[in-house]
Length: 187
Image (cartoon, rainbow, N blue to C red; front, side, top):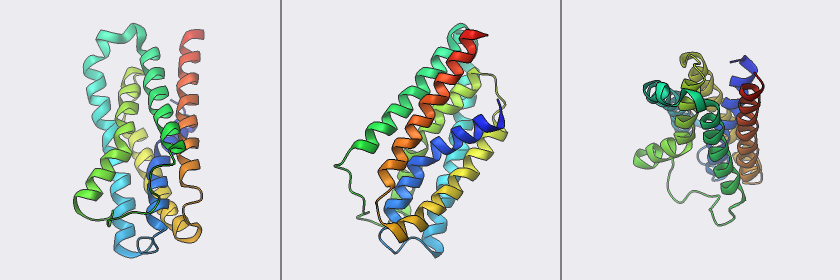
């Protein structure tokens, strides 16, 4: 898999974590110091770990679905992307956190929720027979960096861009899925 593809997948996956950080940053209390570190570090860590878990699950079932793996990869990325887009258009979600999202169970739940999509990507990468460590490391680093930038942006700009970033991330994942599907069908 090309470096550009991995970076685009990483950016797409990082958008929901970044959007959460923008929303958390709007409170003005989480954009600096330990709370900021806890958020961006944990989001990056979980985004690193989830593709690895998905990849190991995927390698176990790969022989069973090898003839349709490109369709499964496309389906998973399209599903995750469409969920992100739908969530981005959901106006009922609050943009300001009611509790401190950088502590305790809330931090763990947010870390899992923003990285569950990466599990599906890890499964897709296993089906494409891509080695997982390098993509997972890039996904984790890019997520951590964009989460930090999201906290800073949220602190400065409020919640203006949060939903738009999640929508953009969803479209990026769908486009990567289409590219995978087309490249396998035309090969």
